[in-house]
Length: 436
Image 1: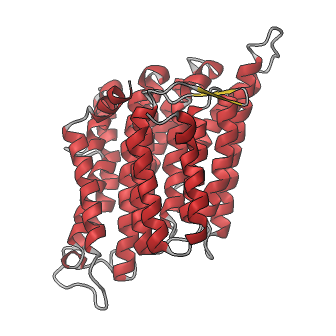
Image 2 (image 1 turned 30 degrees about the vertical axis):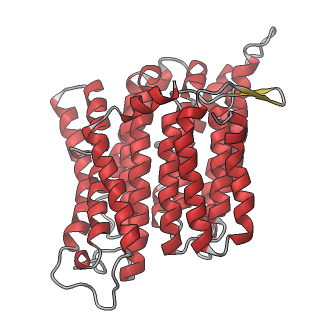
Image 3 (image 1 turned 135 degrees about the horizontal axis):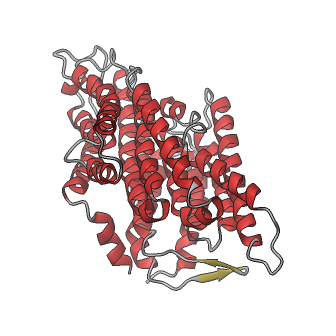
């Protein structure tokens, strides 16, 4: 059994080893993917190991947290494999590993204060994964937003810790505001989430995944520590209305773009609203269901963003005009897009539908609510379906080339895994049983 200390050190050691070969993507990309797969495969067993103490700070990976590490690591492994073809930045291979290492440390940290500090370092790491000649302003804006969120979580954690002193300080109003705004920024909830959808349009899918999916999932797993600080009445209200507006804005936004990557960004925003609605019913009781939904969302986003970059590489762009008739030359990739889009939109029998239907059962069953839910689902469905349908045209685009077979197969396997997660929705419970 690998001790927790060695497991937490793996991403940083791998980042250092990959630094000399970072410009040779044919070597760096598959090695980084193998490291992520190793982290995913060992996470349930590392959760059985004892907690560790580093400089007086406790670190522990629980059985409930291990499955979500697996989901994030698998999504990052897919992004690394795809990066070998779509030519990600040379900083992505070591940068993403170091960033993920800080996220694992934040997940295992024994206090919200330490978790906020480690997430701040992870936010800086996201900048290295987003950097490109045409994305410097977007990368800087994203990092500023994420740093504000992590520092507010750090402040909230310090406030919660100070309240346990023998002579506690009267800082609960500050901590309450810091926790609410910090979680809203990291998750991307309305009105703090407008930074997230533009990331889907850039040519750095790994950075977008870390910022939009990974940090939010880690933050949601720390929800229990901050909920007592915010209050049992205020927190559900904020998540309920913030989730509802986020869901509606994402659904409307997904109707408009012609680019696959842009549609995915808004569909991910709508799906985040669904998870927030689960927390809005009862944050502590339903955080597991919400994080499970966010985990399925993360894998679907990784699949779709890699597929969008593959299609852009093969056909010149990932918009409607460029992909007209593309199915004959990229059948595996576009089939994977169909499966991943169905999961992200919450259609049966995909994994996203299994968790989304459970969340719908928690909310009001009134007719107007069910109608709003259905209309919100139609936005991402329409945005993704029109691109897939356009690809079924009779003539492939001139000057295009065929998809790489190995990457098409990998994307299709990931899509089928999301299908299996819908047919067998107890995969998270099974992974937790391995870790216990």
